[in-house]
Amino acid sequence: MARIAVTGASGNVGAEVIEAFDDHDLTLITHSERDDMESIPLDVTNRDAFIDALSDEDVLIHLAANPSPYADWDDLHRVNIEGTYNAYEAAVENGLDRVVYASSNHAINGNETVAPDEPETLREQTPVVSHDARPHPDSWYGVTKVSSEAIGARFASQNGIEAVNLRIGWLMSRDDLRETQENPDTSYPEAYARFARAMWLSPRDCHDALRSAALADLPTNPLTAHAISRNDDRCLSITHSLRAIGYRPRDNSTEVLDEDGTR
Image (tube, rainbow, N blue to C red; front, side):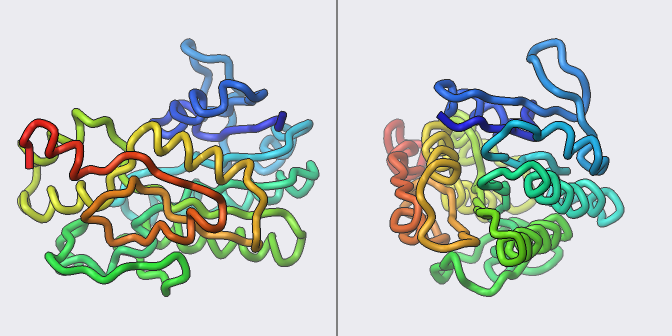
């Protein structure tokens, strides 16, 4: 049974990590003290404190970040890039086996946007994007994800630590998915709805992706895997995720929406 540390444990994905690894020893790390969970408060830009927090762990799932694709550079780079460097430095200093880095579809979907000033708007016809396609960030947030993937690759090469870049899609419940189709709060409702159908990641598929990324034997290091559900409208390929870490998503946005005629 692996000992797993989780940064950003109070976020949306963090909540799914807690459920996904209920059979493992978890060390939860949050930015500040929490009344609703037992956690270690930590600013990930404080490298020494980060090193201290990872003693006696096997795997780090690094979720801590500014998660907004609309944020400005000055609000992103310290926590998203320096924080990731510190995560790997702390993992190496403590002899951890693996870091699972929460990357994002925003690192690569810039080719699919209608225009740079219209973020998150997929064209009607989109090519399949493989795990090894050239990065094409759609925002400064996406740039920080590309940069942090590169940080992981450097540590994997120089220090031998296992680095998994898990490019997480749009995590939301079935009801929230339906809401994106019925009442899209955006100036581009059709594109917004398409994006949601393409990038949807169900909670149970999120559990499976996280467990696969943290526990599966890796055929290569570093390794990049897409984490979306098996959506009919997807443009991110999940074939590599299946072959490399055994991730087999069970949910499909089209099937969910067809259940009640939403689509």
